[in-house]
Amino acid sequence: MDALLNPRFENLVWSMPQSIFVEVFHLLSPAYFIDPYREIHRPIHPSAVDVKQYRSLDSIFDEFANNLAAILQTRRSAGHLLGLAEYTHLLDCARSMGDAMMADYIWHAIKEDDLVPDAQCYNHYMEAKVWHKAYTGLEKYHTRMTPHAYRHRRFFTPNSGWQGYGTAGNSVRKEVLQIFNEMTLEGTSGDTTAFVNVILASSRVGHLQGAKNVLHTVWNIDVDALLEQSEHPAVTPYDRSSPLYPTNHLLFAVAHAFGTNNDIPAALRTIDFISNQYDIPIPQNVWLELFERSFVLSRPRFGPDAERNAKGKVSYDFLNTMFETMTAEPFNVRPTIEVHHILAKTAWDRARLSEFQRHMRAAYEILRETRRKRRTARSILEAYMGHSRAHRAGVDPVLLRSRAFADAVHAYDILRLRTTQQTVIMERLARLLLIHHRWVGRDNPAWERSILPRALEEWRDFLPQSLVYHIRGGLVQFHGTTFWGQRNIRPHKRVPVRRPALDTEVELDEEANEIDDDFFWEAYLQSAPHLDLSSPPLKRLFWAMQEPDDTNGYAAHEQDTFLDEELGYEPGELGVPRARKAAGMPERMRANTGKRRTNEVHDTFDTTPDYLSWT
Image 1 (cartoon, helix red, strand yellow):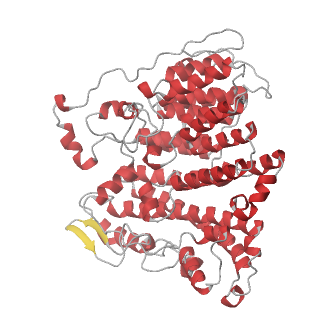
Image 2: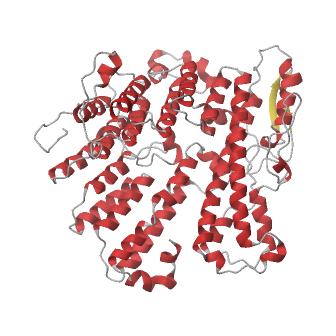
Image 3: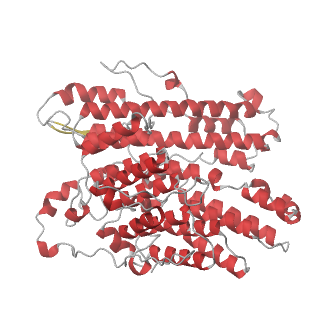
């Protein structure tokens, strides 16, 4: 990427043979530049990213897209035309970022250049539509289909948090079906990926019947029969080499489509059926999707639309049972820190202290493991850059521009961001532990006399010095030099660790006295002023070195906002402190609760050979 963007190598970009340029251009893969960051940002709230002063996912997407555009502009300035291979790769990048506008622009360019898109082009284009703006901002939390969500997504200029794919007159399903019809009219047969996109597009507008029709028509899977536990006919047989043989992608689509449409039983039965009939192991990402969707449906609902928003509700026990199932034989899913975060929040709701602490400590062990990997990756960088001040002056600048060093920086940067993600989760869990003042009942003195002091000692590195918490006699507030809302909430620069406390049997981590990485690189930069920070790998390594944050301290409404973010209340609902007031709201003041949710029509199929139409 850096070489192609460097003006010194313009002649190389101009003079490359077409076949060589295509190979080089395909090396700029979203799997390398986009997917790792998309995964890490998924569980982090945008407000937490702002507080920690890390780059937003939007800015990462924008930089990647702008770099691709700059490279192609250089190539075109020499009179070269783009071929289908380059356009296909650009559509793949748009798909990975969920950027339908970029995909529209590329599609228009393909048509302008009189090129004929293949099945891969169509699949990327449809997927970019289905996931438009679904990975970034508050939009990533708004994929569940409810009457409230449908209303917000039907506008051509939606509010913040509801941008991206649309419903009603702005229906993403209609767009995807139009693309699918164009593909079949051009004589290109749809594969599993194409039908997956149609399933997801139907789910985006709450039209589950459309998703069921696809499953029944292509694979003879009758979801309703599975739910009724009646005898199911044989599925459509396909050879494993067939483009219509089910894949992990289909299993994930079923989990996401039915999960976001409040039907976890249908998702579970259908996935289990497909897995058994076509001999496909259920991968970890499918289990994690099912688990996350079940968590969303387990949340209590409030406000005038509470009854309809509670559709598909599952119990807390259901969530725990799913956890036990997916982590046991034969699935053996390894729980991520996000899974423990979810289960800890469920225990918080139920005031189950021991369960909350068990998941919090399990989450910390995952953080420790990630930090060990980060330390190993940092030691590789130090070998290039010098371990001591004396060695740093003699570092070969050519070595710091090598491909091997750039790859080492990339590996380290991913682990650094993942460590930050997991540290943020631990800080939020520590805060939840502290603010729940009824862990042991209303009048039990054990909380303030023994449990709370131990918690403050054990997790002090994940708490600021300025704290507010409840005791039986009222509210206790400490004023210190750090507070929630700062980038570093600790009064020191060392690695945050779990501390030994009474009756915890915890040994102090060996890294407790080590300088945390952000401060390590800040000190390194001061000791090596000769470094050329225009070098792309070094620029990437040191981009996080910023001025200390002066964010405002504790505000009265800030804790309510934190709880809304942590506990997953639906947009448009009234928060817990206002729930009683909402329950007494007169009926005439409540939102219109008409029965019809969508204006989507049912799918009908044309069984003409080699053609499948959707009207």
